Image (cartoon, rainbow, N blue to C red):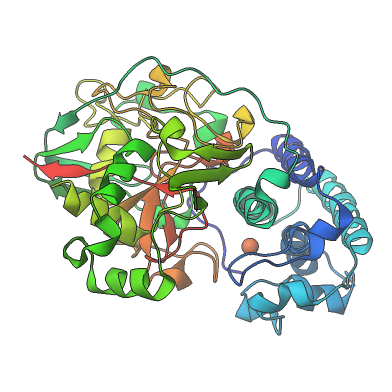
Length: 458
Ligand SMILES: [Fe+2]
């Protein structure tokens, strides 16, 4: 493991509290599953729920191994099964085969998880005065961010595994405030892209639980030049997307990148993932059942690939935004004299609450109608930038100039052939997201909660 740099060090008690909270939430997500559900792998890209609960514990065990002298590993078999892709931690099971093993059993995995919880909390209570306390606390925080990423993956994988057969405790979604239309016109110029731009004044320094952490791939903040541009105020909806489909969008090569067109033909795509055709009607299956797509016309389209998002944008006479254009819109306009200030969210600096965006804590287990979160809108009137769906951008996932890796094999080994998505989804924990967060997937992937909005040159 490389040392963690440039992160503000959290206190032992705040990290212990966060540890308890985050670890408990993972188990709340899987609570409605039956034991048989934990071991099945329904596609190469997903992982069995048992694997997630073990793997997130394995991550903490590697930390204990490194910093606790004389520690004996819980089980060499577990280290093999629960390692994901870390070459530095030795041999591991291939990802597509995670669902081919019935051992370790679910019970054994849960026992392993509880033991790691005990060891970690005990380790944290004895950390006061430890010569490497700051490094360890920063790594524990990273482990918790890692676990939150897996909470989101668990939601995707449970959806793929069970979809409407999963008994989630779903809350009733909010009501839209009305139609959100048009594009926000945003002035270009120099913009500080990324986390932690120079502080302009002491008062503008922000400290809240939501923004005391950022991944290395969000840093360093650096200036980029943007032309004037326009960005959709609303996410592209199922209704918009149905128009594209009904106008023959999936049959017309003109809208598609060459690789996208190949994928459409090879995979026989006719609609986003989880759309089904019944009685000459498009239906969408989600955690709450099967619904006519027309009845969900005002909800953001989701489970689309970069290829599909780009094809729609071209058909609509627009384009996808770059990640810098998206981020500038999502950080709003700052206080006078502070460039765009230190705003980490479209509404300003206050941390996220349930009325600002549709995230995991809202427990809707699905997207919400466009215009459901007026209090989360930016000053330019862009809605739902944070939450609901991850938004595809046209930017390649590459390091920012001056990038320094803070953790081996975490973010930097993926800097090739992937596209950046922004903003978080209904499956993202609140404290895990901010406007500088860079998620990344391959252009053909669509099992995650991915949608988009379009941009245009001015
Ligand atoms: Fe992982």
